[in-house]
Length: 278
Image (tube, rainbow, N blue to C red; front, top):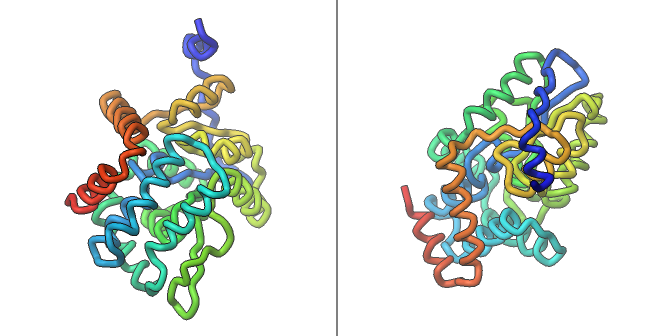
């Protein structure tokens, strides 16, 4: 019997008590933790339908995001490519226009994709008076819209530079990804007088291990395979709000994506179909 199997045969530890504590807060990843799928995809799809950019600009960005989520590896060149692709979506557009489109896109595509189980978890923290923050690599604009609509405390996200109300095509700081998320949480803890040992963090991705490891109460939500294994080894809480059928389907989609990365023409056609789907 493998170590992972041995872990599964032992009763799961009881969940930590979520109670009134002014120095505790909860930090939630966004994609596949709070919402089903990738927020950047939903944003880009909505902007594309509104004529913000042609199809060719979105293909590279979507496949880079897929690469990160499925392969889970980082190097400076890939990070730079991802940053460039993401910024190309909004460069030259007015901030007010992107924000207005984001509000509409939330109603059209994102609201119905909120995981009810994760939403309920966040509400438990809010109900006892704890702060609840989204911490995501997604653009701060979409992260703030989601946090506001859900009644959360706020959001930390990737910030695109703008001048005179127009996006410049540059980032202010770095992508909020991997270790950058943990750094942002630590900085927020200082400004908000939080004790990270009493805080909670929720994510689906092994890439968020730095953030999960920085708090006293980490929880894997809808976890990918590597995060689930890690969580089982350390007796972390695991919450999976996907149905068995849904989880299997997501796994098959992931395998299909990885297998199709080398087919650039097929990828482009698939992305075009997804963008046009109502």
